[in-house]
Length: 272
Figure 1 (cartoon, rainbow, N blue to C red):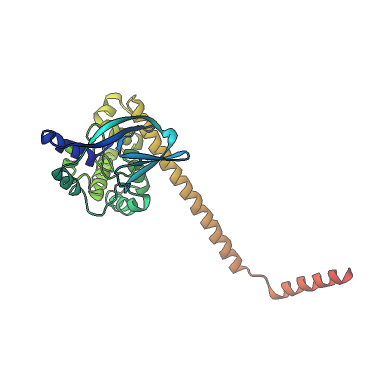
Figure 2: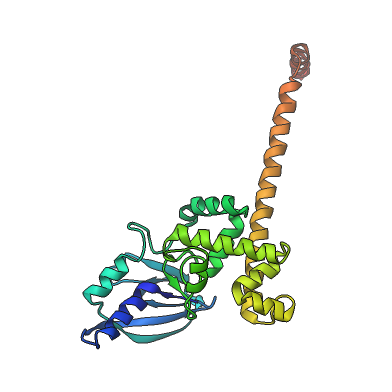
């Protein structure tokens, strides 16, 4: 569950200056079936899909199934003051989109995975469940960025800017690695601790009986296993194809056999 950090920062700045600004227009607070909460400027329906636009210009949007929207309400969205706009602009690297695609994420996940000896596909599954690729995602509890790091945890991990994609992924990967080592590489326990905290895992001696945590672990494990199964199938098919090609090259048809076959066919045809 997250709120765009830029919106929260703009709101904080608005309140800090004593509500001197004026409200620009109404916005929507949308709750999705997967538990995500977000503010959007407006929406656009297209068949069974809905685009939730994060700004009036429509430069950034999230597309969801109409049935995934379980609740929404109109809220006042304050007009950002100059200071808030400047702060938001400085919150992350220039040119980084609000939502990263798998292609955008792959190099940074690969880099972090290599550093901490973790499968990049596992990290991709974690990012998908934590933020769905939204660089400025912020949870109700205050967790930030792609891998949803709490400010205190981010500081301990050496993450200077939780909204910097590579810094966040590097810090989150390091934390997941530490949890794996803590639980003797039991992935289920490590993921549960990442979601609910190590103290909860130790309190219940395993995955805590929280619906959110259990669903979180199940989704990541299912998605990760699905990816690996598909990869193994593709690799097996490629290996079989290569083996068949090599076998054919080692055992080409002999010239005289081919000639005999051709002659036999010609005799059979002439008999008709």
